Every structure is written in C-alpha cells, then in structure tokens.
Image 1 (tube, helix red, strand yellow):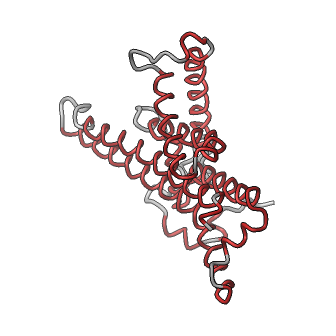
Image 2 (spheres, rainbow, N blue to C red):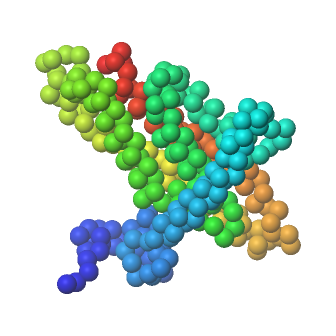
Image 3 (tube, rainbow, N blue to C red):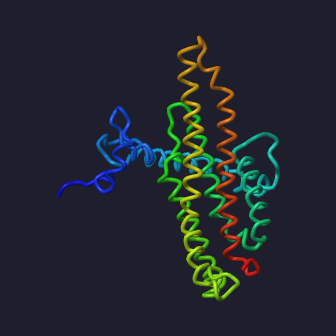
Length: 262
C-alpha cells in the first residue's frame, strides 16, 4: 500500500516548499530527525524525552530537601533547585486561587503546575546551544492544550452535571440555538489558540536568536557577545509564554467549575 502524506490530500500546501525542497507542513510541525523523508518530523519527540528526563532529575534533586522534616520548612539561604520550585509553585497556586478559589486551585494545581514546569523548561531548552525547544513545535503545544480542554470540560460536568450544558445556551432561551453554536466553536478554538500562541511566539523568539547568532559569526571577532542581550530577551519571552499558558488554562477551568460564573 502506498504511503500518503498530508500534501497528497491538501496539494495547496505544496506551494509552500522552501528552495531546498522542505515542505511547508514540515516547517510547521518540525523537520524530521530520524527519517529525512518523513512528512512530519520527530525532533520534538526526541527532545521532549530529553526534557522529561531533565525535569525528573531536577525533581529528584528538589525532593531531597522535603524528605527531611527539619529542613523542609527552612528557607534556603541561596538559590537552589528546591527553592526555585517553591517560588514557582507558590506563584502558580496564588494565581489559581484568584481565578477559581482556594479549594479548586488545590484540586487542579497538579495539572497547571506540571504544565508550567514543562512549558518553561521546554522553552528554555532552545536557549542552550545544541538543544532543540520542543514547545516551538505545534504538536507539543496542541497536546498540552487538548489536555486542558478535556480537563476543564470534564471538570464542568463533574461539578455541575448536565447543568454545565446551560453554560453553552446563554441567558436568553430564544437565542439558545445560536449561542450554542457560537459557544461550541469558541470552545473548540481554545486548544488551537493556546497551542498556536505558544508555538508562534517560541518559534519567532528562537528565530531572532538564530539570525543574530549568524550575524555575529559573520561580522564580529567575538561572535558570542552580540546574541547575549537577545538571550535575556528570549528568557523573558520563555517566562511570559509559560505564564500565559497557565493563566489562560486556569481561566478556562475556573469558568467551567464556578457555578456563579454561569
């Protein structure tokens, strides 16, 4: 049986090929790493595995502090892995508490905190020479966004039962059919919005670093100096994009589980 690619079904995308022959679809979903002829690359999959190993190692390092009762509540006098996670998790929990209340914040904290850590370190990986940033791939962002989409809708039904459907109807019964269609389209667009925002910003951020890195190599005797300001700017973008993803995810969950919001 012949192998069909995305281009076979949507030939209009064939016009988006680069001069080197790389398909536009590959440009969106990542260049192949293990199989050059593949329609969708797996580079992001490999480096997502690297990212998970990195997070696991950092978690084990941070865990050592909390296994000892005497040191668990004592603040570190310097920046440590455990201290970093404490500050990050405290900020995320406070943000969620403002969005959905303390009880729901604690309930959904593991999801949002995991997304925050995964996206932040996934973004930062692209700032390290020789590493790839999996969050600049649409597959990675879409996977995270779909998880949020499923969780907040499931949470809405668990919290309110079939009454959650009223959220899609609007306050005016006569306009309910129209509002229902609009709400369904709006909710279906949320995963796309989350993933495209993350992918687009991280791709653009690291493209700027690459351009100025190449420029520095050609024009300067000390080429690593020119990209330094853009590395700091890139770090800021990494933090902001992780924050925005967690913030919007918290908003969606809060709207779904709060009775008074409907």
